[in-house]
Structures are given as C-alpha cells and as structure tokens.
Length: 488
Image (tube, rainbow, N blue to C red):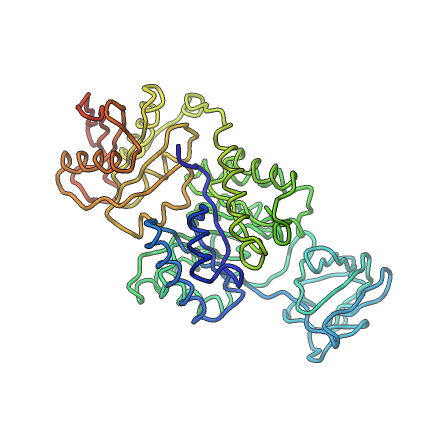
C-alpha cells in the first residue's frame, strides 16, 4: 500500500542542486516549498525549472508551494551583529532609529509597532527566546525591561504575546511574489499571518489574476495559521482557503507552547470536516539539521501528526540548510509509513448521521463505503478537478485511492491529499473506454492483479468538472456490477 501521508520539503542551499533534488524525490518528497523570504525571482524560476526536470526524470509529478514572506515584524541590526541582553536591564525598541543598535537600543523594520503595544505587554523576540516587558511608549520609542535575556542578533522577529499586531497579511513584496509564483507555475500559494477570511480572499483574487496573466492554472490557497487572532476566525479562514498549515513556530510564540498540541488536533479535525487539507509544520525533525538521526521525541511528534489526521508533514531548515537533507526525508518517510499502518479504520462510525447535498459527493462517499465492505484492492477516481479524490481522502480507509486525470495541474495539486496517488490518464470521452484504460494503467503499475475487486467513480458526460455521477464495481478481468444513480 502506498504511503498515505505526504511530505513537504523546503528548498535551500542544501537542496537546490539537480542531483540532490533527484535523491529527495526518490526518497519520497511530494511537494517542494519555495520560501519567498529568501532569494530573488530569478532564483525561484531556476529552482522551479530544476524541480520540474527532476520530477520528469523520476517519472513523477511533484508539486511546488510558494510560501509568501508576509509582514516583516523584525528588529534592525547591531554594531557587532549581535548583543547579549541581561535580565532586568532596560532596552529600547525605536521605530525612528536607522543606525546600528547596541546594548541600549535597536531599530525596527515594522514602524507601526509603537502604536500596537501598551504598558505591561509582553514582546517575544527570536522565537520567544528573548522576553521583554513594555514599560511605556514615548513617540517612536518602546521602553522595555528584559525579563529573559540571552544572545540577540540582527533582524530577529518580534511577536506580541496574545497577538494583536495590526500588520496586514499581504505586503507589496507578497503581491509581486504572487506574480512570480504564477510565472513559475506554483501549484499552491501559502499566505503568511492571515487573520481572517478577507486576507485569504484578497490573496486568492491576486493569485487568480496573476495566473490568468501568466496563462497558468489557478493555484490552491493555503492559510498559514500562526497568529492568535486566526484561532477564533479559523472556520471562516478555512471556508476561504483550500487548505491550512499548522505553523507551530510563530503560533506557539503568540499563544504559548503548551496550547499548540491541542490546537494542532483541533485545526486538523476542522480542516477534514470542512473538506480542506492540512499540513503540519515547524521543527518536526529539527535535530537532523546537524545530526544524522532524529530524536525519539521528534519521531513521536511526526507520528502523532499523522495520527491526528494531517495530510502532510513539512520540513523547513532540515532540508533547506541542514547537513542531511536526503536522510531526513528518508527518516520522515519511514516514520509516517509506520504511523499510517498503525491507524484503526472506523469508517462506518464516520458516516453515521452524514448527509450529502451533492450527487458527486454522494458518489465519493458511496465508493468509500462499498470498497471498505467489499475489501477492494483500490478505489479509482476518474477526475478532472480532483474534488472526488479530495472528499474520499477526508476519511480514514486502509484502501489506497488512485486519482486518474488527463490534466497535469490537477495531478500535481493532488500531491497533498492524504492517501491519494495521482496518475495521468489520456483523456477519453467514452466511459467504458476510460474505465478499461484505467484498469490497464493500474495493471501496468502493479497496483492490481487479475481477480482483484476495484471501485471506479466517473462522470457522464466525460471530462466535465464536478460531474461525477457514476460508481462501478469491477473485478479485474471481468465486469461484476454497475450502479448509475439518477442525477437530480
């Protein structure tokens, strides 16, 4: 059975060369993340070309995710590149200061910070390792006292505990980066720091316009949940997105480390219930940046994300700048495979009191139910948009789902869906011919053998997005039965 949970790997200096890309794809990467916080448009275009070439050489479709930088809420630079802050010492953040900082003060990239904070607010720098308490605000200056000190270097990020910073999710840089992402054919765009549905809707409008201009397919939009304000607005953000990323780094700084595990479970559950996909990210295999094997805690963290129902787990610095990018992906693939196989399927319980509003959605769920009780070898969705495969993948089943599509963009978009493997199938306008070719493809891939039962879903007329209206049960080598529901 193929690996159900997918792997996202971030590209960087350690993983950009063609030979490393080939090894990463063979190790199990399904999606490459392009971090638009670093690099130029030319850098990203070169990397995209290399990814597509490596994927073709491997005989696979691998997706590309463009991860937008979002607002830069950072301190400035220091005379010596860093300082050592001492607990109880005074320290000033000055939005008007343009020089190099020292032990007394430093400048700010985010000029609105003095308007966003109040006395007694807690400011967390460098992913929460440095803690400052706001004493008072004087014009452009925020006067603070160091609660927890340590080394503080150039351009470290700032969070306000509990959230509340007014920086917009989309900056001018992000808007230009969206255009670059569409020119290179990104399959997904991840939006940093959205606070509400409006942020995601605006990003989608910009992405769709850029895609039309570049004559590229429309991307799936991913909301990175990393602000405290996003938590109460999670359902509306989900409704405005195609998927979410549980971005545990900045989120943990704003809401506290202890709150994140429960939030992770809640977010993944809500995504599945809303027919959206979920990615779990940040420090999943952090020790493998410098070590050849993961810690047991990291193994448990990755496995628990799989058991929570995440569609994908993501690597950041581990593959972007770590010493062992290929070994890290291999280790992660091994962990998620073991976790996939350990899951208990409770499909009938999930369908209790379930209502279906659409014919194509009903067919998708009917295929799951039928395949589960007949113990079929595979579930096959002949699909143009990928929607049928998405609905099927929202429920745990120990039978692999194969999405067959004539459209390469759809094939790549399916790379993130849990328990879905996508293959290209030449476009056919005759249902029986398409089904016969689907069976032949699975035979060639070694997925099925003669005598196996499979369930196939398709639509009539063929090739119409959202038109799935047929479920057929086939015994490889002979037709068993067919069921064609009436279309309302």
